Length: 99
Length: 495
Image 1: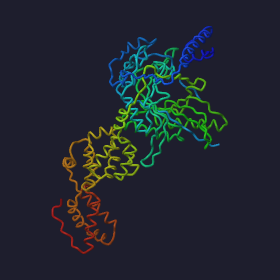
Image 2 (image 1 turned 90 degrees about the horizontal axis):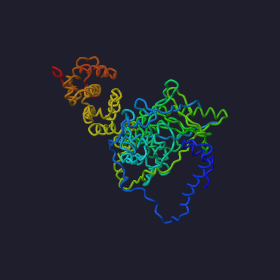
Image 3 (image 1 turned 180 degrees about the vertical axis):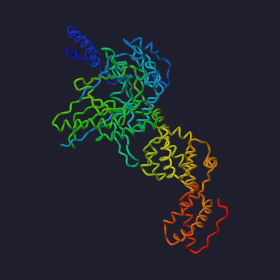
Image 4 (image 1 turned 30 degrees about the horizontal axis):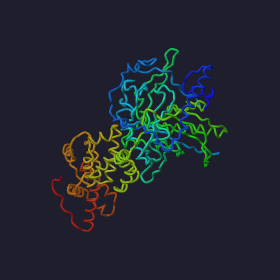
């Protein structure tokens, strides 16, 4: 399945990735081969196979108890590019315009 | 051409759990910023979410109450979008296999409810909270607190069943009552525990096809929903009737300034790239869990209102008022168990609700001061005509701040209730003795003079007599005199 340059641009836009013009062809080819690989599964005859169960017993629901594993604000904010007064500092959340 | 509006609602209900939806951070409100966060709710690499049992149970309770079909195997999905309040760049929600589907919510007074059909009800997690943009020099930025990120939410989506903003307001009020009734959420819109988005479009009246819709986001009060929808319907109507077209858009509404604003238009509509959350197993709701949820369901507000009408002879309106809160209905029924049912309803609706309103207290706090049997005891005495209404209200006032039963309170305040005929009879005879001319007028047929005599007895009792009892005593006495019997002698000394 061939991925086109425009699709790469669109996917990059959705994923907020900056892709240079000269990278488009290479990435299109790589994504196409990933999809082809997954496509191989489609050719398998799976009639009679039960769908994979995702629910091992260990994955039962958790009890509604705080587990005391919170990070401190310092630990959490140490990962932020910028912080202020205990808050993460981010680009302004855009407000609306007249309809 | 006349247009009609078609409205569908998306409501977010913040669940009242101790911990978050997929991690063990406290879900409490009001902690210092970014202190109830961990690798799971911040979306750090390697963290594994696990669903909170209490949130699943709450979802089942609400789903069952609404008559939804419960899916035995529902699936969590990732919904991708980039926004500063979303730490993972995706939200864990449910997509094509939600926990609950269909169902309806009855809205309105007992016996006259209208059911509004629902599309679905599913579990998801809340986002963090971002501040309005702050300006510092030539830079603008927002501040984000992730304490709320990962708090359990239920999303309820209605069918496009509303035509009027007022219907939406009534629906939200009914939903708020239900989530509180079931104990799944505090449902306070001002605090964001219940939020509402509305999809609205206009079409020529009677047409089957839907017009182009806009979405109104983040309506954070019932009044905001009603007024925001009215404003958006007026805007669309003006456009369409002027020959224009409505553009698909997401809008916000500022209730204070009655102003709509575009948040995004169709061009940058989102592609959420949903896919099944690989870190979470299929959510299995097996028979036993479902049966436990069903068994734990209280009598629902609309069923209870209908029962109050049938059992106690209350009006549909009164039953609905009493079923506005589960604790209020409980209080009323405990009161009605020891007193006249209709009189108890009047007392709870007028006196108790007045006090709750004046003191901005909860029915729980009120019941701690004046337990239902205590109020019921007072109402029973009023019903037995032992205590006149005005005095009973005074006793009720004392009950709020003092200990003791009715008789104790009366004694403490030096008041003797004169409800019983034996108490009042001497006073009646005394008054008749003092007003011979008036007696003659009543015997000649003047009912206004009878009123005068009632007033005289009341005065003598210093307001402690029950007027109805006084009137009955006077009427009996006059009937006897008209029949030619001689009056018994007034005892000396008086009461």
